[in-house]
Image 1 (cartoon, rainbow, N blue to C red):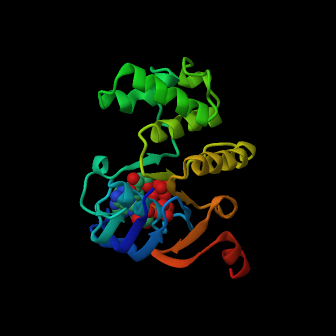
Image 2: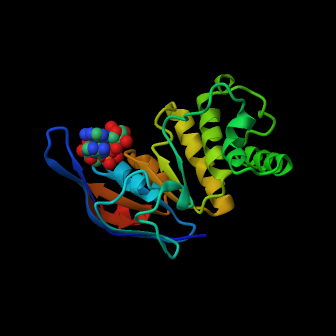
Length: 230
Ligand code: ADP
Ligand code: ADP
């Protein structure tokens, strides 16, 4: 299990108008090993930019990112021990569920036996046991999101990153999948950062919530602390 520390983290973009725009304004965050933390705030406040910097999809303009003891601020995504679950499931439509989940392991040149063992165990964990031979379009939205989660987990990252993973699901399924994500996260104890603009989602899922506004952190606390001192 690894911690995630963001130190004076800044991201400045050059906008379409040519002017500089600072999306993340020097934030400091310490996430404990195994903790499930939500970044909550209105659209455009810098949540996704922060998450993408942790993943290595964006390089910070200033500041540092530590995963465990390692300063990963300038490292490429493959060196970071993170995996991201996106809003769009982005499954390969021509591959069955098993092969979708196995894809990253095959790139690692792992043996067939080991791949089968890992993929079967992850499919069981996310509640898709026995569905490995289905095509993605034969699954419901919730099941497809489970495949996306399985694909991230099978790589055994130290840190799991979620970018609004439930916003494409209907309201009932969304509530159900919150619990499923927490069940799975607790079962393997993986450190997690979850981005959402949905307050009830953040309140129901998080160990701690980080409320962002206009590129700054406004408040940090457990759901109870946030509820009692809004
Ligand atoms: P959130 O996830 O909270 O909705 P984002 O982190 O996606 O916010 O975006 C924060 C701000 O940074 C927004 O105003 C957005 O338009 C801007 N932004 C994000 N990515 C880029 C980019 N690649 N180039 C320029 N501006 C960007
Ligand atoms: P969301 O807020 O739902 O995460 P955004 O529309 O902010 O989605 O961002 C979608 C993608 O486009 C992200 O990769 C982000 O970095 C990029 N992006 C956002 N705003 C801009 C912008 N003004 N210029 C260039 N890229 C942007």
